[in-house]
Amino acid sequence: MHFLTRLAPAVQTTTYKVFPMLQLSRAASFTSILSCAWLFLISGCDSSLSGVSTSKGGTKVNKLRIAVIPKGTSHQFWRSVHAGAEAAAKEVGDVEILWKGPETEADTSGQIAVVKNFITNRVDGIVLAPNHSQSLMDVVSEANAENIPVVIFDSGLGKGPKIVSYVATDNHRGGVLAGKCLAEAIGHQGKVIMLRYNPGSESTEQREVGFLEAMEEEKGIEVLSSDQYAGTKTEEALAKATQLLNKYRDQVNGIFAVCEPNCNGVLEALSQTGLASKVKFVAFDPSDTLIRGMSENTVAGIMLQDPFEMGRQSVLALTKHLRKEAVEPVISTGEYVATPDNQAKPPYDRLLRPAQHGQ
Image (cartoon, rainbow, N blue to C red):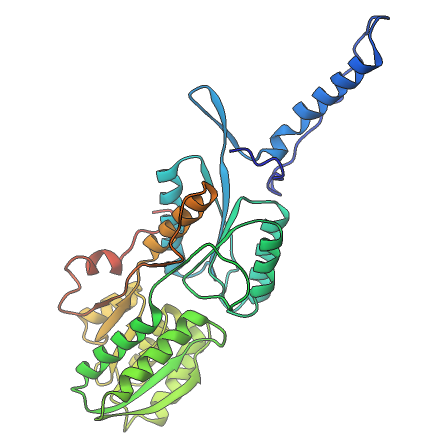
């Protein structure tokens, strides 16, 4: 497939050499001169118009350039997404993954700038995990206007822009399962806290809704606090969780946090306040600290996604679309609950420690 309107990546430049004027015979026509000039321009510009080229069976093949843009780049979850995206590129062949995102998941303006840059550089497609469901709508519409297809993954986008597919965990169901896990851990009796993540993060908002719905079904459980945001950093979550645990320390029996950085902060807060193991804790997404907590009886359960498969399925969906193949509008990658009892069994063992890029 030739994409003649594609520009080269910003990190690549094409050097044009000025050759000495060829000596033309007196019989050379003006038409011949124009033809030579045209051939010169084609040979000089072809590499920038055709993207990255490889050789397959002696034939020059153009690689599809797919931009994969996570919410952030500092958490283990995204490194697993990156590994899955690269695995899909290897599986398909003739695909180059361009991985770039903001460092923190709170940097919405930074993520918008990354998307705009990839649009300017005429990538063949974009795989995006929007860190705000509304703020990323306009830039996805810009991609639509430039005929650059977009797959959304991990977290949803507001209605309006056209997307090829949505690849994600069923986050609402994940929240429900987390609620059931915590209810069981406290014997279906007691009082609990839920810490929110960050306004506009569609995936975590769905988890929060699901968890609260599960609590409504538990007649013996009261929700002490569910409106506090822990923020996007572990340090912020530590501060907020410490504040709430000290406020409700004589009442609280369980606590739920909705993503990895929040959960790491909550576990540290439980330790610092002397409530670890006394207050049952259910986390969402694993880390080494949280996994160790299950063995130490300070974490009752961890909700698991499949970030590797999320990255893989997103890239596969986009490449199918680019090749004019049918793609499902919604692709679920599953949701699971790891506990101290099942953590060593498949598939929980693999999902607790998913492959990461660079390993």
